[in-house]
Image (tube, rainbow, N blue to C red; front, side, top):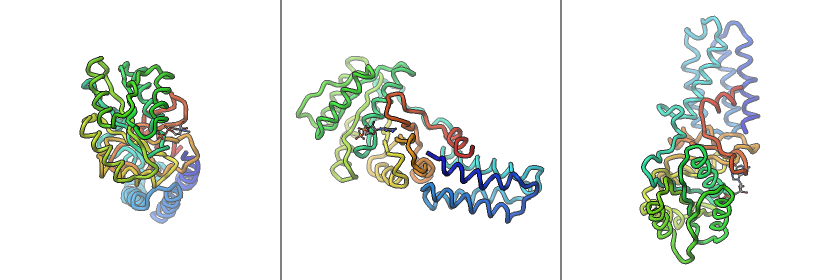
Length: 300
Ligand code: GDP
């Protein structure tokens, strides 16, 4: 992810740092290249425009152009604006923290089929167990696809995370209630509810997820989206947030050769933080999302 964007951006910015003195025209030329690079990485047009305008406003003042190292100052402005775009204002690095203090806390995992939702639920449960020493109970609410329920049970066995025993014939809301009850009785810290996905957003799916949300009052509703799908991932997030209300996003397949636009536009378009990124199929391939680190990786 980000390789081609990173290369293009460093190419454009190196031209500025190589020069001793800079004119407004030099900055404008470099920013045109930055804009094209962002659009080619599948960043949404309004987000790319706003980014360029903000950099331009800050970079073309006399304080920058007349400074001793104008090129480096422009690079710093680009970096700072990128962190702001990725993290949203005010939340800095805290975006990845989950609000799971009052046990049993409920995490609702939502998303389209194939996005990596079930895998991510198990990765996150494992992380909470190993790093935060939480007792986690996972439950699959995918009543339509028995294979999905079994997949979660298998991942539970692999990772040593308990899963709610499967009872055929219960609907998603009943399973969610049973999971919460079991968690209270047995003293679990976190209940991870893996909802059913669909191939695309439909009214039935949204109604089911909304009913589960109302029954389970989740502390976190995490949307899992495929980072390779670029602006589609952002549209999916807008849709889920509008209809269900999400507290954060997990972008999967960030180990793939996508262009990175989903990560760059997500916060600016949806207002919701990216909390984690999936970087592989293995159970430990989940990382907290840090805006500073990602901006650093993009800008080299
Ligand atoms: P679901 O239908 O949304 O529950 O999707 P699954 O969890 O079954 O995942 C679908 C496929 O994507 C599986 O083969 C996963 O191993 C794979 N997958 C999930 N997350 C990632 C990731 O971050 N990187 C890669 N490379 N593959 C992933």
